[in-house]
Amino acid sequence: MHDLLPHISAQLTNVFGSIPYFMPEIYLTALFLVVLITDLIFGRRSVKLCKIIACTGLLLVLFKDLQQVALILDGDHVIFGSMLLLRRSAVFFKIIIDILSFVLLLNFTWDDKLKAHPKGVSDLYTISIASVLGLHLMAMAINLLSVYLAIEMVSVASYLMVAYRSETALSTEAGLKYVLFGAASSAVMLYGISLLYGFSGSLDLLNIVAQLPNVNPVSVSFALMLVLIGIGFKLSFIPMHFWVPDVYQGAPTPVTAYLSTVPKIAAFALLVNVMPLFLFSVDWKGVDFGMVLSAIGIITMIAGNFAAVLQSNVKRMLAYSSIGHTGFALMAVVTFNVQGLSSLTYYLAVYALANIGALALASYFNNVVDAEDVENYKGLGLKYPAASVCFVIILISLTGIPVTAGFTGKLFVFSAVYSAYEQTHSIWLLALMITGALTTVVSLFYYLKIPLYLFLKRTENAEVASERSYNLLVLAIVISFLLVLLGIFPNSILKYL
Image (cartoon, rainbow, N blue to C red; front, side):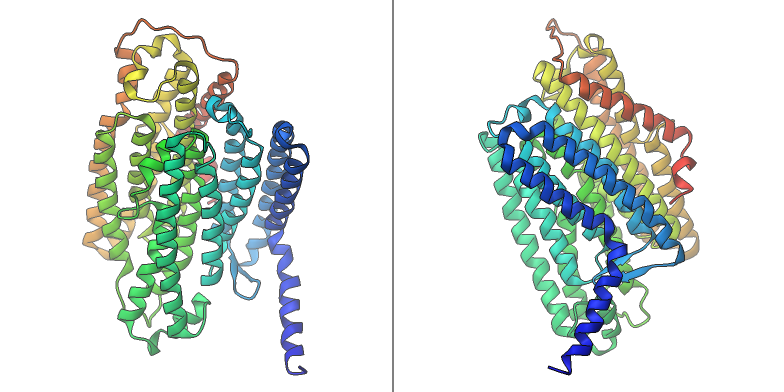
C-alpha cells in the first residue's frame, strides 16, 4: 500500500495539472448535463429552451477554445497521463468543429419534417452536445484507449441521431445499417488495438513506437491497418464507405449535414495524430502507410465522384460527393508536413461550410416544394431566385471554381502536394495530383446538374415558402457570402493556421 501512495500522488498531481488545458471539454460536460436535465424536466416544451442553452453554451465553449490558442504558444502539452495531446492543430480543429456545430444546432428546428417529430427535437440537443465532446477528444487523442472511447462516444451519438425519426421506415433502415457497419468497424479496430497492446504492453502510442524494434513489423502493420479501418469508417473512404449513401439519404437532413462535416473533421485530426508517429520513426520497417493512404485517396476520389454522377436524389449525390472530398483531403494528409496540415485544415473548413449550405438548401426546397430528387428542382430557379443563386454559388465552391473558397482550398492542397513532390519525386503524389484534377472536372457533371434543372428547365407548379424556411434561406445567403469572401481573401484565415 505504501508503495502505491507515491504513484497515486503523482497521478493526482498530473490530473489536477491537466485541468487548465481541458477547460473546453469540462464546459461541454457541464453543458451536456444542463441540457439533459432541462429536457427531462420540461419534456417537449423544452425545445426552444434547450436550443438557447445549447447554442449559448457552445459559444462559451468556443471562447474557451480561443483562450487555448495562448496556451499552445509555448509548445505542445501532454495531459492526463499521455491520454491526450493539446497542440496547435488540435486547437484549430476544435475551433472549426465548434463553429460548425453551432450552425448545425440552429438548423435542427428549421427542417419541417424533423420539427414535426412526435417527441420534438429537444433530445437532439443533448445527443449533439455529447457528440461534440467526443469530437474534441478525437482531435486530441494519442492513446489507443482514448482513441477508442472518443470514436465510440461519437458513434453512439451518431446512431441515435440517424434513427431519430423512428416513425419512418427509411430513417429506421438507415439507423440499423449505420449501427451494423459501425459495430463491425469498431470490433475490427478494437482487435487491432488489442494486438498493438499485446505487442508492446502499452496503449500509449509513443511507447508503442518505442517498442517497434522488438516487434515483427508485419504484425504491427496488420494491427495498424485494423485501427485505420476504424478511423476510415468515420472518414468514409473506400472501402469503408458502404453505409454513407443510405444513411445520408435516410437520416433527417440536418443530421446528414452533421454526419458529413464535423465527425469527418475530427477523424482527420485523429488520423494526423496517429499515423505520423509511425511514418517518421527511424525504427519503423513496416508497411508504407503514406503509400497506402495515397492509394486509398486515389480510389476514393474516383469511386466517389463517378458514383455521384449517376445519382438523382440530391442527398445521395451529396453523400457520394462527400466520399470524393474525403479522397481529395487525403492528398493533404499524405504530405505529412506543416504546409499540408494547414491546407488540410482550411480545405476541411470551407468544404464543411459549403456542404452545410448545400444541405440547408436541400432542406429549404424540401420544405417548400417537397423536392428530394434533382428533377423536382425543375423550373424553381425563377420562383425562388435567392435560394437558387445561393445554391449555384455553394455548388461552385464544392466543385472548386474561382472565385470561391472551394477553389482556394483545392489550390492550397495542390500546392502542398506539389511542394512535397518536388522534394520526394514520389510517383504516388504525382498520381494524386492527376487524379485530383481529373475528378474535379468530373464533379462538374453532377454539381451543375442542379443549376441546370433550376434555371434551364420549366414547370407550371408554384409554391409559397413557409415562414420557417426563411431561416434556411438566410443561412444559405450567409454561407454563400462567406464562401465568396474567403475565396477572395483566403489569408484572413490561413495566416492563423
